Length: 445
Image 1 (tube, rainbow, N blue to C red):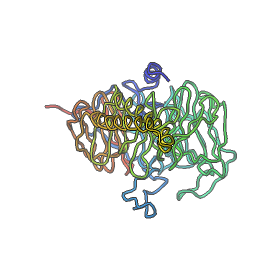
Image 2: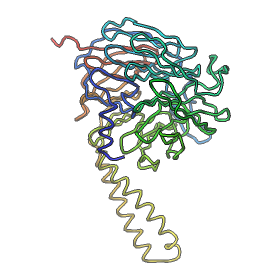
Image 3: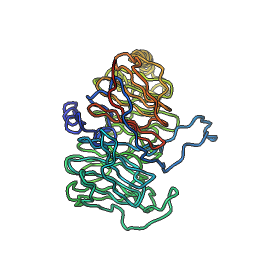
Image 4: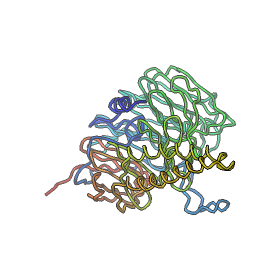
């Protein structure tokens, strides 16, 4: 996809000043908006939406591979993720099996819809519809104003219930956040490959099935990500699978480490965090280009902003990617020379030496791509909103300047801040205790 097409897609799918229609703000899960957060945020209200994650945290260590401080690769539902449109905050609950619509200004509940299982992923708002999946195995389309059911579908083969994650759920639960492109909503059902995992597409207005494909090696869990042509399906601890969006046929699989977090950057894909907190970046075909230590990334205006456990940094992404592509090409060339070098070719040895010198220069140039780095113990969530970076930490949320990393403010929250959303005049922060905090502009005097 060309850069021009990526920009057009972002304009079509990205949030406007009154809308944050899904987790990450758009089908790319970009976590980027032109709308700034409040400059002096004051909590206006909070709501206990409840949280009951499917999976516990990681083991303390991987003794076999001698790896300490493991990072969980299955933390897709440890906080409710609010969506916002026209003054309504819509949020699902994995504790109460509900979808609620909350008045953005007052915090009052406007309507409640009950499913028959945990709602683990952010609803996707499309026009007058709210699309939401549940562990009961169904994808629901609800009227945004009233919460009434418009249609429902069951992507799995039958309505069979089993014990799972401490609850009674479908044998084919919906464990991916739905994504809408044009008039098509994509969803999956099932997490056990031997039982079959279904990836399906439906008409967003009617629920009519457009296609459905059964997979036997795809434990689908995480937020679906879509470009105009491709659908990226997180595969639990494994690396995401790439499908053709028009018919569900498999294109390939991303390289690197696994994890349920995926970001489509327009010309590339970033995913992770792996078991050690590592983000892998590749092109849309799945070829790996670069690896970063970190938990979250946002990309805008030729820069990457990277969040790890102790710091927040900015990188000249365009230059870094160009160097990464050159480095990969040189490694391939040097590998191709190995046989000739072993055979005693002096010419091949000389070429390999030249390549080695260039690789050393590339390493230095890549280090120079770092624009700034600041201390920031906020590893859980990251958003770029109107030139301000907002990061979620344990017991607080913080804002930083995108220009130099200067800390602008911090505010306390109840729990680890793992969900962020912004609309005109309001910042929503959700935590692993199930709280949804709404911050609005305070008195600057």
